[in-house]
Image (cartoon, rainbow, N blue to C red; front, side):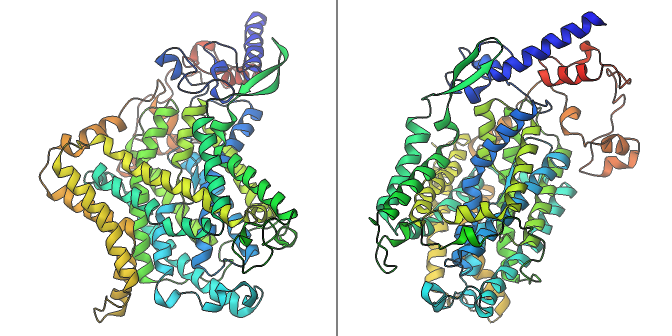
Amino acid sequence: MAAYKQVICNQVLQSIETVMAPEREGNRPENYNFATEDVNSEFSTEEERDKLAYCVTDVPPWYLCIILGIQHCLTAFGGIIAIPLILSQGLCLQHDSLTQSHLISTIFLVSGVCTLLQVTFGVRLPILQGGTFTLLAPSMAMLSMPEWTCPAWTQNATLVNTSSPVFIEVWQSRMRALQGSIMVGSLFQVVVGFSGLIGLFMRFIGPLTIAPTISLIGLSLFESAGANAGNHWGISAMTTALIILFSQYLRRVPVPFPAYSQHKKLHTTNIYVFQILPVLLGITVSWLICYILTVSDVLPSDPNTYGHLARTDTKGDVIGQASWIMFPYPGQWGMPTVSLAGVFGILAGVISSMIESVGDYHACARLSGAPPPPRHAINRGIGMEGLGCLLAGAWGTGNGTTSYSENVGALGITKVGSRMVIVASGVLMVAMGVFGKIGAIFTTIPTPVVGGMFMVMFGVISAAGVSNLQYTDMNSSRNIFIFGFSMFSGLVIPNWIMKNPTAIATGVVELDQVLQVLLTTSMFVGGFFGFFLDNTIPGSKVERGIVAWNQTHQEAGGALESDEVYDLPFGISSFFQKSSWTRYIPFCPPRRPGLLDGYDANANSMDIKHLPQDQTSSHVIIAAASM
């Protein structure tokens, strides 16, 4: 026993050295990419490049969880804060920075809660939840309807009294209508997920449906990007250029940082900061330059002069006014109301979100060393995202939640697929939502800087949709026609309807409103034509991309057992598997005989031979602690 403990202690010391000196070469977490070479050049062979430092079920040291959790928060923060900033225009809040900060705090809190629920009880993969642009497009379409058009006086900052009951009712009435529509629409996702209907839907949805749907999300937001960037094109162009510089040109340039390890003592290690945090760095540098130009009075102080909104003092003392501690709660803006038109618009966004999330689950499984997600895990994941949208609507974010593709990509960069890291991210986002000053800080970002960020983000979203065409045969005139017609229709029809809002007159007001919202949502129009044409025009599954799409999503992710990754925690799966009737529940794991075969039932001992192959040092630490 003493010799065995010595072996364990030696491995514990090695695990500590692994984290403190991540630049060392080897087959343990020394290959950890956060502090070493780029993912495309770090390892000499493809097998070494694919090696994970921590797989999905591993538990890294607590300090590494916090560091990587912060990184995931920063990776997602651009998309999370962009949503309330865009919504503020439709809610007539563009001149109420304090309320904007409350919305940012609320969406951070809800994103954190939904992340914890998804990782613990949902699909159980290391996938972060946050605000979704798929619901932003129909929300803005709903808020652009004639009855929700902002009064002219709300567009003038000098006429807006943010504390007046009239102004509060103007924006809260719009928010309550948005909340109710999101909550009702999210019930559809809950039913589809927990009932297992998502599998039926996916039989008819392929790349030619997904590509125009996702691409038009980004393209439909070009006016918002232009409106923000147009307040000072020089500042916005600088922000865009910096983000491009950091994310594309400098991503393989290492930055030396001091580090310490038992082997090398005090030394320097290379961290690829530009690859990890390009958006944050671009915004921070532009923000700092705007501050310097503000204090030196280079930027105009007259609100009516071009370039005034590039100043950092235009938002007043919003940081001083914001509370240190705030607790967003359901119904904080009043009792939600339901709009039939809004519900149908949100449904279009919910369907798009479900399609995108299924793809994210498979990609996340591959990058985190997990086997492909089984049906019950996908059903739970989609259902839990529906519950997340329900919570987001109740809390009043004006949006829902979905899986973040950016953070799935971050798993491939860091080579850390542990879900405990995402748990840490969820806790951190909840903390960011509770500390009101954090949301207030984000609202002080100059408008042109936000516009520059939008230029990059919305472009990437559009390109991400087009990338789905890689599975199809684009030499086929059939596929070219379907994609081209869907994209063009998704731009032309909503643009014409917006310019002719009275053109739809069926005689039924509710039907007019539903058609108005659906036909002004580019994502719905393009996705509908893509779906209809792809399923009615003759074409083989290979030509349509269905075969390649399914093969990609069914690739094995790793050596871990499916039940080890996807079963519910706290003995819930074991409880369900004792009863035969649970096999009829789509979100329950299937009943398996000998669930605990191969594991020692004695909780006070852990034989080293029971550890899975290539297991990480965290399990060794647990074994040592139990002796």
